[in-house]
Image 1 (cartoon, rainbow, N blue to C red):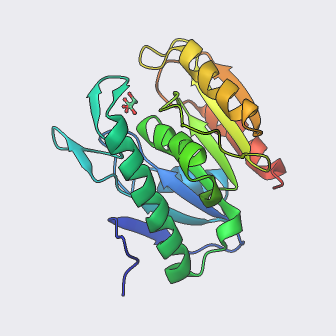
Image 2: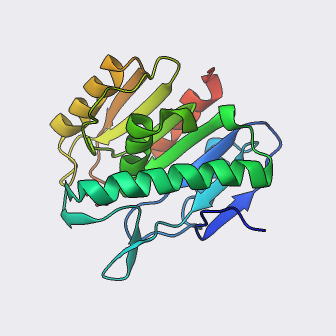
Amino acid sequence: MRPQPDFIHEFVPGKSVRTLLLLHGTGGSERDLIPLGHELDPNAALLSPRGKVLEHGMPRFFRRLAEGVFDLEDLQERTNELADFVISAAKHYEIDKGQIVAVGYSNGANIAASLFLLRPEILAAGILFRAMLPLVPETKPNLNSKRIWIGGGAHDPIVPASNTKELVELLRSSGADVTIRFFQSGHELTSADVNAACEYLTRLRY
Ligand code: MLT
């Protein structure tokens, strides 16, 4: 039987106990970030779901009302649904639940941030490319043992640097160990992002 609740997804077994939870951007699919996952950690298992919300046919992880304006009710529901999927997938594929690292880009980075804020038990660490503050939770989560790396684009027209910094403040004030780097780029992912994230993951202890 497939993991329930189900998402269309790819699972690639690994050679180490770590699993990267790959979360694509708007218009992406479960296949998009597989090469990135292999590049970031060639030994890790990869779990890569496809977002269930369609915006003009483009898959996303939650609804938005406009660019950068999120449907908060949907975001909360989708965050819980994704968290429940990860739990059932972990059982199904015999993934170590204490070794899951989210790797998200854009919309995927935003739902990864939401997982940290609403369901922090799911993730040990996160690599968030071009993330923004998705929501402010009613109560602050306890993120004491969490390690989070965030890569921003200094000229990103979609994610203002001030918004990424608000996310960093909230995560840090909740106890997370956050590294933030800004790159000379826009919203697109660059090789400088990937190299810096690779280095961080290699040194990562949690
Ligand atoms: C979002 O909707 O999550 C952000 O605006 C990023 C995007 O997907 O364009």
